[in-house]
Image (cartoon, helix red, strand yellow):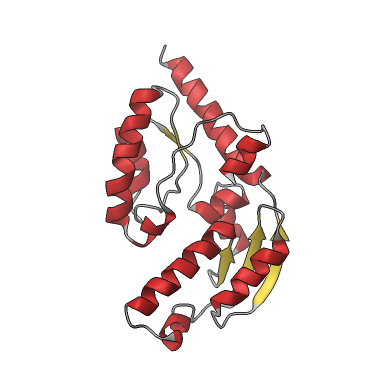
Length: 193
């Protein structure tokens, strides 16, 4: 989504990614994120925006503490899905019962990768489907305007869950969350001068 915003000319930024495949292990995220943040802070002092959710390092404000430690601005979102819905806890409004799984292009790729990894570890299809027990179904969030391909990718996951709906949300909610963080950072940097 961020790359799309840059290509569309809606976001003027240099981006650095940390692999989405670390998201199953908070320690791996932190281990790989810290050096990236340190380099970014040296290259772009006062202009680094951390596009990670509050919960991406744990449930106890670890990501906020990391942002504070490096004196950088973090987006106002709980996780990537919340960011894609517009941040500020909108994912909680969209799923108050916590019984849905939201899948986007990135999340679908992540789950396909995780599925292959788990197979290599000896887990079968039944074990994989147990990961999704207790969920009511899947909501596809089409951020890039390719809902047919995305739906086909979700069906390949063979999660045992029904696709309940597809929401064509585009990239504007992500753009809004990032632009708000940029503005917050500008005000903060202006206040410190």
